[in-house]
Image 1 (tube, rainbow over the protein chains, first blue to last red):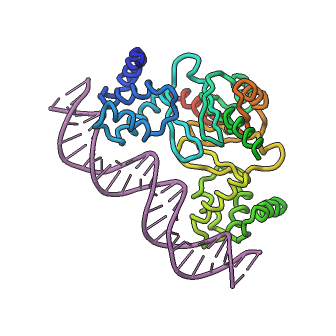
Image 2: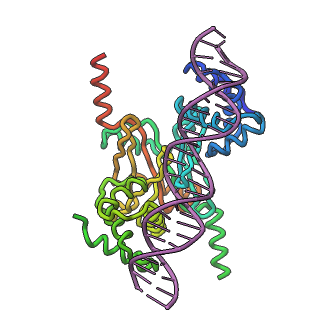
Image 3: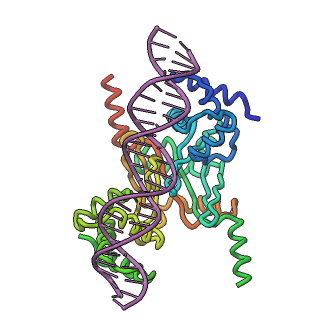
Length: 157
Length: 157
DNA sequence: GTTACTGCAAAGGTTTTGCAAAAAG
DNA sequence: CTTTTTGCAAAACCTTTGCAGTAAC
């Protein structure tokens, strides 16, 4: 299911940073890799990991996510519901160029894996003397589904 | 100190939406207007309002911020520390075009009041059929100060 | 007068921490 | 063997809620 190469690579990164390779950490990494969609909260990740590793504790998941975050293997993202969510940084084209579309009506979060900000980062660097290492971009609005629903609703009224 | 016109306008908006104009709400609005920098957490706003209105409660500040947020007078923003912060939406050029530069070293948050995303929003609308009403853009990296500090530090080593 | 609003304290939810036991290297 | 890591429970945190009293309209 999950590409073993990624798991190995992340294990190497952990090892290189002096962390021990415990089953709990591996299970968490595997679980993150298995979840394509991303944007899971710590609790959601915990529930998933628990399916394969039932005796893991929530605190361990938090601690593992902190480590993965520190090693820049996952990104912390935060919308306005006061919950921190975690995204795996994937290889290649997707790694740095990853934006969100948050529907204000149904709450769905879509992802864009396309670099829309290359030009903008240039501007920021030169005009504001700010050395950009990463960015977070979220658009709020209406997803295609909700636009359609609203149109149908209006037709009824 | 604070431009009275803005206070009046916001009071009108509250009134129009059927809310009562209490001293606590006015004090909160005045305090938000007095703080140019923005990005304050509920607690920070509470402490500021308390200076002029000592017997206000934290819950009231939360409730007021909820109302102001609902009326789109303030924006909720959230960085990765799990705290919700509030930004006053100002008039004119600044209202929709407001991005953040977060320094990962010193934690300072700078603002850009310039629309960098007009083109990008066009792309999102047409390519992803997503109707954008708002956006949140944060760049992480090193501010000019920290870049300089790091350079000096390296010279020493 | 009615209704909405307030402060307080208690409850709710998420995240962190202390600690003794267990496991990794 | 030493050091890190774990699970649990308790604590710490931010935010919301219930309620009786108060203030706005």
